[in-house]
Length: 163
Image 1 (cartoon, rainbow, N blue to C red):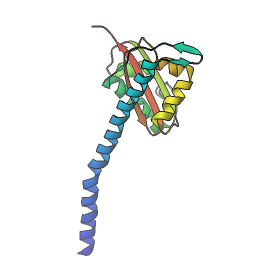
Image 2 (image 1 turned 90 degrees about the horizontal axis):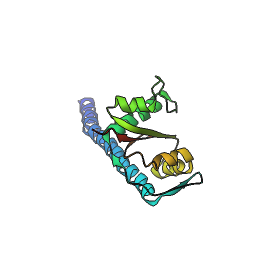
Image 3 (image 1 turned 45 degrees about the vertical axis):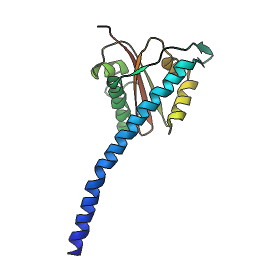
Image 4 (image 1 turned 135 degrees about the horizontal axis):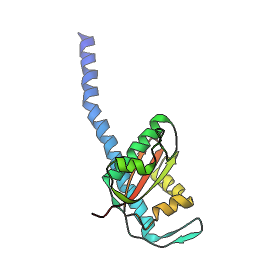
């Protein structure tokens, strides 16, 4: 009888806590999205120097869930398959992944990073890298989506096709 009660208690405890864990992970990703957009927009508002090139302030970006989905898919893929590259192991480029996510674009770009443990550290690394910094400051993009899986970070940028 005691064993049945213990097993039932373990089962109930596990069942009660699984949604909390999933909800918490979703909340962390949502918080990252808000913080990442705010960080990029603060950089865009202030302007900066990217590899010696003075970048004037530019308009803020809007969050786009399709770009976020493309970024999340690539972050997940790199994490699961243990690689780090703009090109997926199946041969897709970032523009193909963004298109497959349903984003109809005029301009598109991507930043990836690996190893940083915080938003602040990945933003600092991207800002120090000329190409990544210039991508965040690109006046030709108007939207972004971003994601993190483990210590794999992806930012996808775009400008939608005019309708």
